[in-house]
Length: 143
Image (cartoon, rainbow, N blue to C red; front, top):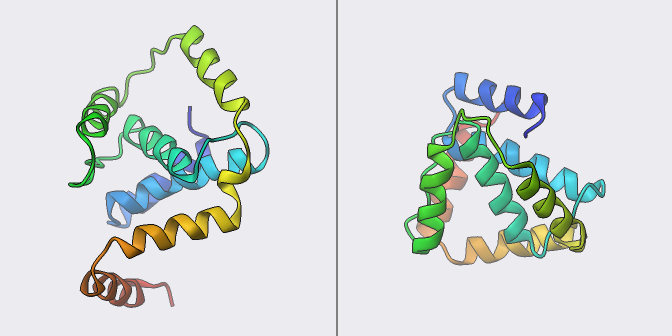
């Protein structure tokens, strides 16, 4: 279950008319914080991001999977979106998930790992795409 502050920040982003990916970013941020404070670990930075995106979808953020996602990821995203608003969860499953994540390392949330992940993701995009988003970020940045 996401923390109250995370839900509130995501709602604030929605009220301000920000993109679903920005709203979901709050949940990813929370997940990275959880790993850093030792609540649990993650096998990779990608896994930490995936957990955050899944939480966002279950919290009601209308975030579709990316075009390049695998079929399994697309199916999981559909399931997460369907579960939005529903509170039922198997306590045994939750406990097993938490136990498995606790065994994983904490380096997935390090600054180096996050930087590596961001650079790898950026390399997959075209120069025009990167330039467009940089211009948009500059235009919408708080003064």
